[in-house]
Image (tube, rainbow, N blue to C red; front, top):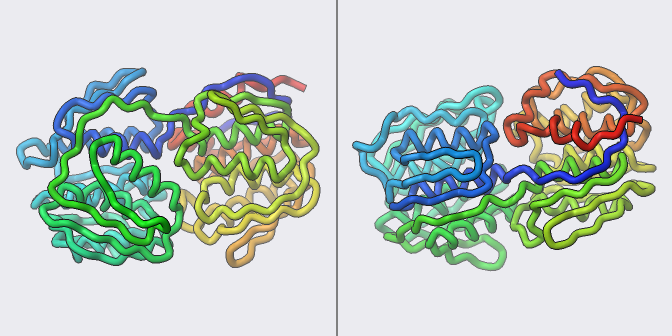
Amino acid sequence: MKVIHPSEVKGTLNAPASKSVMIRAVAASLLAQDMSRLANPSFCTDALAALGIADTLGANLEIDKEVVSIKGTGGFTTNKIKSNSIHCGESGLCMRMFAPITALTRDRFIFKGSGSLSLRPMRMLEAISLMGGTCETSKDYPPVTIQGPLRGGAITLDGSESSQFLTGLLMALPLCKEDSRIEVINLKSKPYVIMTIDLLKRFGITIDDNENLTSFSIKGNQRYEAQTYAIEGDWSGAAFLLVAGAIAGSIKVKGLRIDSFQADKAILEGLTRAGATVEAADGYILVKRKELNAFEFDAEDCPDLVPPLTALAAHCTGTSVIYGVERLKHKESNRALTLASEFSKLAVRIELFSDRMEIHGSKPAGNHVDSHNDHRIAMACAIVALDGSGPVVIEHSGSVAKSYPHFFEDLSSIKVAL
C-alpha cells in the first residue's frame, strides 16, 4: 500500500529500461550461438520471467546490475533444456513470444502463467498447428501445451487482439528449414512489430515486409549473431513521469530515444494536445505544467498509454476523448472498467462507450483506490493524486514491479511538499 499526498514535482530522472525491448533481446540472445551482452538491463518481473525462460531453455546467464550476459544455444538441443515446464509469470509477451520459439524443437512444453495471465486469451497460439507444430490451450486460456517441430510455410493471422504472437513467429521462423510467409489482417500495435524487426536486424536476421505490415516474407535457415546491445529507456514507464510534470510542476526525463520505435513515444503527442510545455532534445525530455485543456487521442496502437493519458485528462478543463479502448479488456485488468471504477472514487467521472472513453476533467479528491494488481493502474492513480485535493491510498501498489519496480522511489525523489 502507498499513500500519495498532493505535491509539486520538480527534478530529473532516468527513464527505466524498456521491458518490451529487454524481453525481445533476451529471446534473440537465446537463439544466438555465442555470448550476447545486454547493457542497461531491465529487472522488472516480466523481464525476470524472460531471463528465467532463457535459462530453462539452455542459455548460460551471467547477471550483473549493469550488464546481463547470455550465451545462447544457436537453436536448441534437447540435452541443454533444463525443464519442459515454462513459467511466464504474468507476462503475456513471454507466453506468446516464446511459444513458437520452443516449437522449433520436437520437445513438448507446457506454458504456465500466474495471476492475471491465466485470464488472458491465448487462442492465437493455435496457429502453430498450421506450421508443423501442435498447440493445445485450456479453452483458449493458459496453460498452453506446445510441441514442434515448426517447419515454416504460409499462414494468415488475425492481429486484432495482440501483435505478440506475430513477434514470436518473426523470431522463430528464420530458424526453420522452409521459407515462410505471413499474411496479417487487422494488425494492432504496429510499432511493436517494427521494434521487433529492427531488433532482429541487429541480431543478423532479415525479415521482408511491406509498407503496411500486412505481409511478411521470412527466409529459413538464417542464423542469429550474438550482439552487445544497449536496452533503451522505456517510454511506457516514462509516460507517467512526463504526465506528472504536466500536471504538477516540471520534470526532465533522461535516456529516452527520440527515434525509438516504441509505440508509447506517442505520449508526447498527447501532452502537446493537452497544452503542456514539451521540450524534446537529444538525451532528455522536459515537460512543464501549463494550463491544460481537453484533448482527443487515438490509442489503438499504444493501449498502454491509456492510463497515463486518463490521469492527464482528469486535470484538463473539459471532456477528453480517448479512442481504441476496446483493446484494454485483456490486460492485467479490464483497464477501461478499472480506470472508470477507481477514478470515480476520486471524483473523476469517466464514461465508457464501445471503443472510446470520455474523461470529464475535475479536481481529483482523496480516497482509497485499488490497483486490481495492475501496474499501470497503480501508477495512474499515483500520478493523478499529485494535484488533487487530498491523499490517495493505493492498495496493491506493489504491482508496479511488473514493469517499473522503482516507480514510487523515483516519484518520491522529485516530489516537493506543498
